[in-house]
Amino acid sequence: MSTLDITKRIRWGTGSRSESLDARSRLLEAARICYARSGIAKTSMADIAAQAQVTRRTVYRYFSSYEDILKAVVRRETELFWHGLHAELKGITDFGDYVVEALLHILKRAPNTPTHDFLFDQNVLPLANKTYLDSSYLNELAELWRPVYEALKEHSDIDQQLDLLMFSELFNRLAISYLAAPSPLFRSEQELRHLFGSMLKPLLGRRR
Image (tube, rainbow, N blue to C red; front, side, top):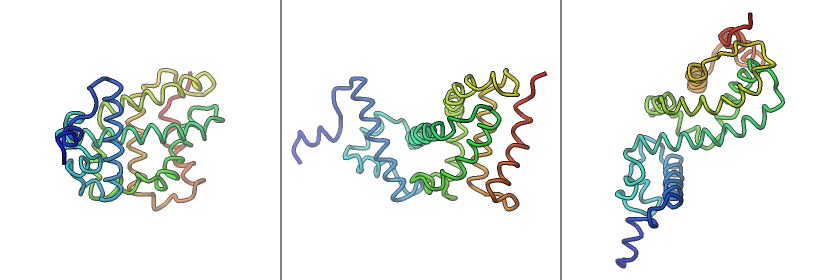
């Protein structure tokens, strides 16, 4: 291998913001491929570096730890999934109904996404759950909920002072729980819709 080739494997670009974002994106895609191929538990930083065709040192330039890159993959996949969810539910005008249908959508669609198998593998659930319930991730999730809430709250029978951060944690815990361990009692979509509506709508509060 030439000196030029070695240099390319150690460092990408000049370090500009746009090139840094591109480098992070390439590393995240490499990590996703490794997770899908071998699972999270069996993927190392060295594996991610090899998939991206860079050195481990380069990976650590952009991500401080293995957990850091895993969180970033989860966040990227969540954003992509979220855009699809909003597109499918855009006709719903009541926020309570939207929340219930969003949870149903996740339970129906998430198992069919390429990332589900490695993100909800029983061997890595503690790490995945820690990622999904990380404070910074929940803050980002609350911001994803905010435009929906703002658009629908005026036409919904809900408390307009809803704490979106608290709501996001509750929503995420429910989604994680039912994805990891489906209900043995409520199986059909209609049964789950009734269950989630009974659990969630009262918690949103009622206008007085």
